[in-house]
Amino acid sequence: MKLNQEINNKKIKDKVQKIFLQIFKIKINNFENLEFNKTKEWDSLKHIQLILALEKELKIRIKTSEVEKLSSYQKIIKHLI
Image 1: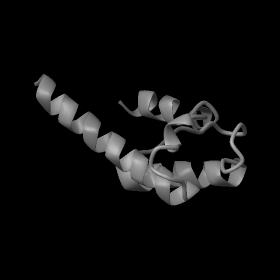
Image 2: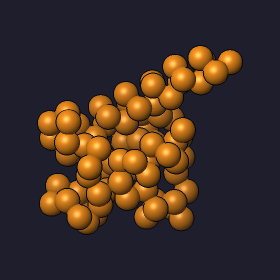
Image 3: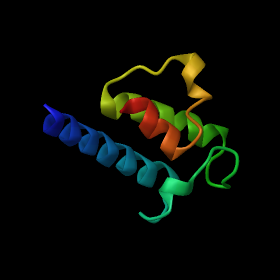
Image 4: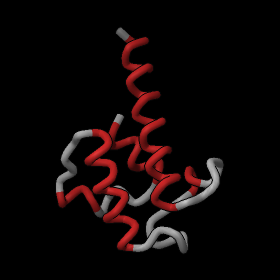
């Protein structure tokens, strides 16, 4: 059972990384340090684009109350896994 969870977690991380690369147009090794409003590439418009892309790609709904809390790559991964 643990192996299946690890495989699912890897798939989620891969999808999130792909979305970060598409939205922010950054190099693959830079996305883990991105934070909303602390990085010039991540403004409020990009934040909404990111949330919408995550919902579409992962086929999930993110509550409005959670959107503001998802303010870094690490927080998004923690929320999803």
